[in-house]
Length: 174
Ligand SMILES: [Zn+2]
Ligand SMILES: [Zn+2]
Ligand SMILES: [Zn+2]
Image 1 (spheres, rainbow, N blue to C red):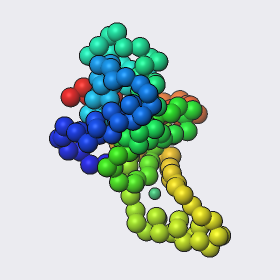
Image 2 (image 1 turned 120 degrees about the vertical axis):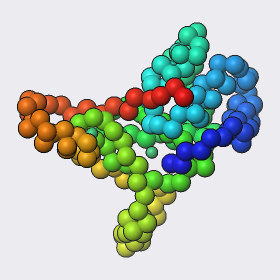
Image 3 (image 1 turned 135 degrees about the vertical axis):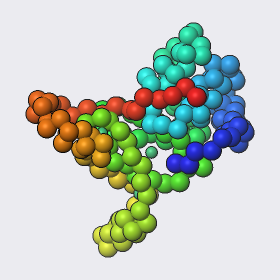
């Protein structure tokens, strides 16, 4: 959730260790994919990451990106998240505090939030029902503030009943 300029030294160590444990070799392509993933503070599908990697190295294939994301997930650096559009998104997991998501069904913007009150209430509810919760993911769908503004400005000339769509915000290469 936090954005800091860093060299991801620890993350790279963890990844290398995991690759070696899995009996794989370290490759320049895997290193590049990991590097770009770590630099991008977004919720990315494997397709999104593929296009980012393409800017640096057009010889990297879809499958390599997909497999590297799986490795990053196994290593605990990435986490899979779903926003209800049948796609798997990946976000940073290592050194990132727990948070939940609000998803705009108009523009696809994903807003991260954390509320200790909500967290405690979830724990209480689980206790009450004798449920041992290991993890959770709270997602809310709706319309973000800028889309609400746009709607009132245009007096909703758009056809009603349009399919809600969810996509990741455009990512900068920096
Ligand atoms: Zn939560
Ligand atoms: Zn929106
Ligand atoms: Zn997130």
